[in-house]
Length: 404
Image (cartoon, rainbow, N blue to C red; front, side):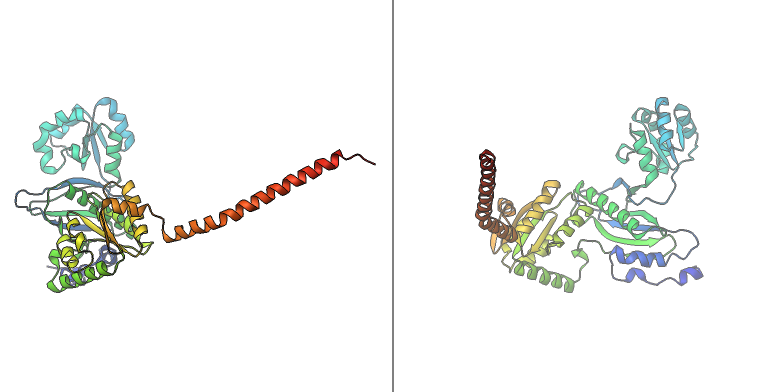
């Protein structure tokens, strides 16, 4: 039976339209009306049921904003590494004797780390550690020669992401007391990890189907992610999306197409910000619906480029757009420039690179002014040099003149 406190919370929040996480955090915090510092949690439903296989995700994420929780870490290592583990902050450190205690059922820790050499002995305790989720795993960083790093990560905000058989993932991004910036950093770190896992799996469609945010004792809200989920759009929304994309393709003087597989959400946000500074829109697209938008536009010849994770830059200055993308691609090999259109002319990959090497209008003007000014500056230099020479000769002549 719901408590009096719970009855005062907003009702049917799951039926509300999805909102971006920035707008939802204040609402979720407002609903944290208990006396303790509630956790803010994310719930993901992933598209793990594939025709030929099943996607299973298990990884760890180091949350930049921390978790707000104290984790009791135990380390099983050789005697010569025991001091290193203690200095790193491990709560329990041991070797063979500690393994025997674990075998006897003493599991008074929340995270277990071991060296590769001791993993042979711990592997026999799968029935004890496995059901509790405590078995060290190289993929999760809990089997490592670098004990200091492993302990530091476990203590400073490392969380595990793992889906159940129905494709559900639950993970905390912090506490109510956290500043919004901390929570957002943790949120994006988790999305980056999921995006990386998507690239590591053969997957048809989106990885994330639904996302909700809630607090320990609060109600949940649906989160709107950065990408447009076409599967969830109504017919009217699809129609509006196609109309908007058609207008952008038709009216933009410059359209650059990229593939971004492997880029993190943080990197994509960074690229968007750089493009926005120059009035360029950088948009992640859905290939099927984007091809529908392309059909009746000047950009229809670009349709074959929309395969895999694709993003488009719309702008007025093709040179600046190509230059920003080209520079970003040099620093981030996961971004690929694959083609575009400049003033109704279709560009292939090499064409985009050539456009990026051209001077912008402002740079061309500056070069022209420099050329026009060059002769005058040279003339002034010659005249000054001649004047100095004449002064020098005059001084020499005066010194050699006989005094009367």
